[in-house]
Length: 299
Image 1 (cartoon, rainbow, N blue to C red):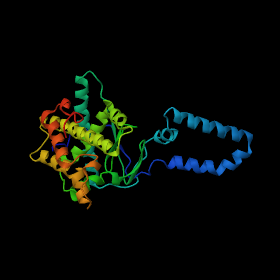
Image 2: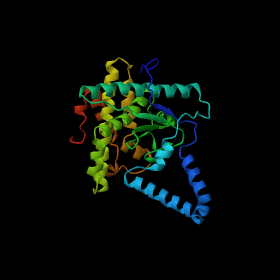
Image 3: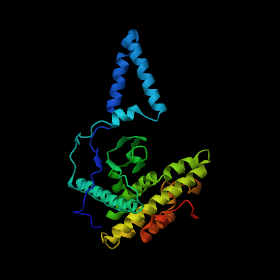
Image 4: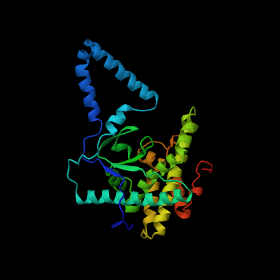
């Protein structure tokens, strides 16, 4: 994949080597506990405490998490506390270039429909990260949080993609990024909200099927980006096979089999290997988001 020297996105936040966000909130809670007895002995202190509780829960009723606002709204100018190898820095640059390419693709697609594409942020982290969707470790892999419109990625995943899942190559990594951006597109189009509403009160098997269809559509959206990259002659021979290998490697059936357990289709949440390859290829071949309706298709 020809990516060097291309535009890098301005929407990448590098938290690698930084203390996990939330330390400020935790420190504030500890400070509050320290002075709580003194506040309770004071009439003014009790009034302040009651008002604080009312404001906090009032905000929660309005859907506002003040802890996230306080912590997530902090400046992000802290510099990494560790040195990165040239290979690690190059990989971060690669991620930024791929994200920029997805921005170009989706800006054009949305503009063609008379709409404005809201570009997501991509957060690079190490080991653990706080998001508006909660705290996550690297073990969960890359993920998109619809509550803050951000993609989260620990670059260690790409090492595991190659060494443990047998899916090496630049375009394999690019597919992973484009898939998560696909979830952002679903969020902007209101698809994610409809999936959540459709799953309310349903059985776990029915909810899993909705999840599979949502993931397959994100694969198809990733393929649409791949189609655009191919049209710009950015792909090398064998790149498509790299992406298909990655899609196959992270199929639910493959992962369950590698884990040593039985393959249980009702427990699938992302789709089997064949489905994931098929839907990525559909988007790649057509470049048409209208062909990505995995919710109406017979799987």
